[in-house]
Length: 206
Image 1 (cartoon, rainbow, N blue to C red):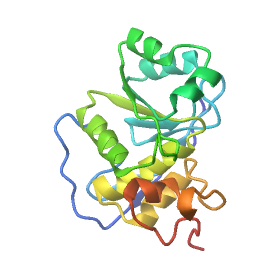
Image 2 (cartoon, one colour):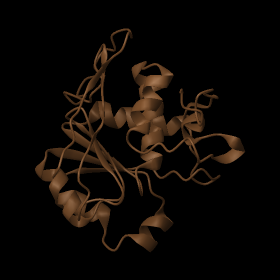
Image 3 (cartoon, helix red, strand yellow):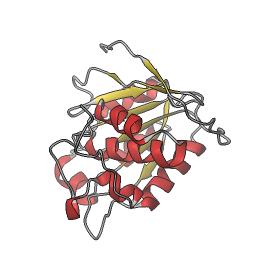
């Protein structure tokens, strides 16, 4: 797969203790936040696939081949944010079954921003637990990496203490798209995930 050049952005933040079992390199250390590396999606993912650090992949919907490729790269946990209706109508294979057949852990955290599947702080907590418990690399995906980017930003802000603008910039480099898409009540998913307003969401610094 083609890879672009990755950079590290130095941040002045307090050290964050690593939880037991947390992946060795999520791209978030005591003072650095790795810039996402955009990878080739051809035949593997819908719309976008990015690597942050060595152990986190954030992507759109994977194909069967994409899941097999992730396993070959050391992914041991797959986290899916798509709702049951999305999976039933748009995915032509049983993702959970394939993930388990490949020996990976499957975690289902469906979100859509409605009353049934809200963007909530609980999802951030569940994602943080999955990261902490992972025994290898992680794939977080939705349809086009939009919801996944919002959850990633919320995780960086709430769980890793990354400054808001740095976290948003990191997620924008994946597929946050907050400059033209608004959610319910004129809030973005990242704001609902955090249950707080973020003044620079939808208004990237110039």
